[in-house]
Image 1 (cartoon, each protein chain N blue to C red):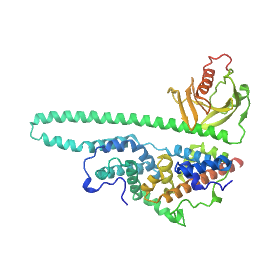
Image 2 (image 1 turned 90 degrees about the vertical axis):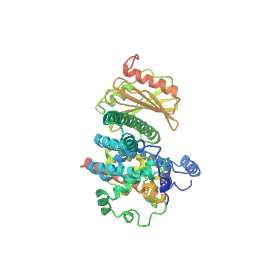
Image 3 (image 1 turned 120 degrees about the vertical axis):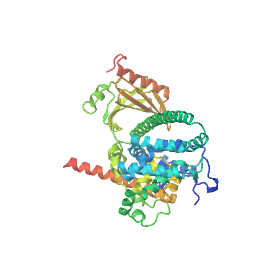
Image 4 (image 1 turned 60 degrees about the vertical axis):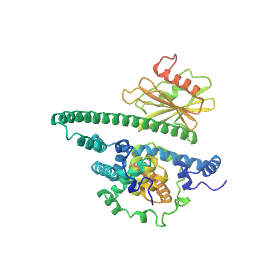
Length: 200
Length: 275
């Protein structure tokens, strides 16, 4: 697959946009995602710095005018996968087996019966509680967390997410559906738990 | 009625990923299906709340400074090399002076870059926060209109609505006595914005519903008055002595502004009869 930002080696030369101008506005986003994935400040800093240095070294091969954000997020994601926290996370979660035993080539295969048809008012209370939602996000496995962060927080299109994560668009859709389902389940569990405590 | 919208369609609808045809079909279905409309709204609220909750960690200052320095050095490296080559044959004194001047310029430029970056980030963050707040307010107003739940307090009497909040919110507010023509108080909700308790006052202007969210101002920062349009609704932000107010409605902006003015003047007490 030819990546949209990859420039053939013979075309590599001086860049018109400076690396600095492109990368610095993205630091807050890179750090936010890095912290969510690695779950601690030190690893997040290491991850961002390593991403930064890798991007700097590879900047000569970046195609000016193409999607720099997707390019550097892909570097961040690949760096995370080979980091200590990324390897630990991969050992605990059996990736595709855990996500979908039927394969994920197509769109979401969530049975309609499993769609959350509960009264929205129940979860509206939970959605207003930022801490509750963050706690629910912390329960997501990395494969679902990263896709939901890219989609919701970074507002990336499915196509961009597919390139960053190196997966088909159908898999992106499937993971987003699963991530949202898992969030709703976690919020509902929190709600019933708090009600249980209140009743005690 | 055809089958309900699938989970994939509801997700793609919330993410703005439907094609024009799919979107038209989905809208046709939503127009006649309260269940799917409710689910679509809920999906949108979940998306918006997740986006807000996901913005959680800010990079430490020393990391930003370190990376800014690295980036600047990387960008200036080719010029520095050229500069050194061109001046190797000049006198030691001249090289030294130019070196110091270059170093001073470099330092000045680095410091400027850091300040500019910080200012840009502050502006960007503030703008993102304002936008997220408008989205949150808009979502809550639409949810209030969509749901069939009664309001926390249903009354057209301001002497009933205001006291209802006693002990529920850490601030107080006034409700205007004299309202613009065809405007009535419907009631109020206790709700939350950014984890802070706020009062949501519900009014009707003609047949248009208006929500006014009142919350304590954070710090001493002035509240800039602004008007934002979101999906046919208008969100007006304004400040009073200690409060920040956001009014949202699909009513004509001029009438919304007139109404907002009444709310504002009630807080400052320069309107006769305000309570």
